Each structure stands twice: as structure tokens, then as C-alpha cells.
Length: 110
Image (cartoon, rainbow, N blue to C red; front, side, top):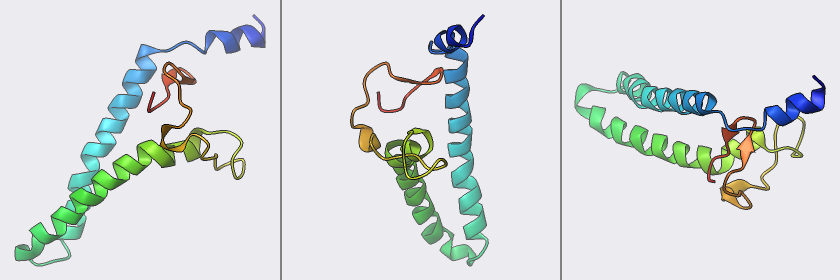
């Protein structure tokens, strides 16, 4: 089996890989709010906890949106600033076609 044959075989969508990425993402999102809220709530008095929780929810929602639309491209886009940081050519889903893949998982915003 040549290297070109292996590369062609890996370009198919994998249901298992996609399920794992979605599960891991959901676990991280579900852990962020309670941990961030508990950490910041411990620094204020009991009557001010609600005032601390609401910005935590707002920041988590904002980071989720920015992570999908902009920051995800910095990790997976080739030809960017350096070999570690990708480019923003496809930021905010510009030029992302339906059915495009990153390895064996679907590209977000498609």
C-alpha cells in the first residue's frame, strides 16, 4: 500500500471521529460554566454570587461563538502567520463549502 493510497483513504467522513469531537466539545462546554462560576463566586460574598454568575454565562456564550467562527481557523487553517498559528482566510465561514472536511471530521460552518 503506497502513501498516496493511504492519504486518499483517510479523506472520507468518519462517524466515530465526528461523534467523538462533538462529545468532547459538549463536555468542555458543560464543564466551563460550573467551574468558572464556582471559582469566581468563591471570591465574593454570598449575596453577590448572582452578579458574578451572569458575566460568566455571557463570557462563555461569547467565547463559544468566537471559537466557532474565528479562533477555530487559527488552529486548522494552513498558510497563516507561522507554522503554529493558521490564517484567517476562512474566518466567519467565508469560502467554506458544504461537505468540506478536516481530516475525517466535517469542517465547522459547512
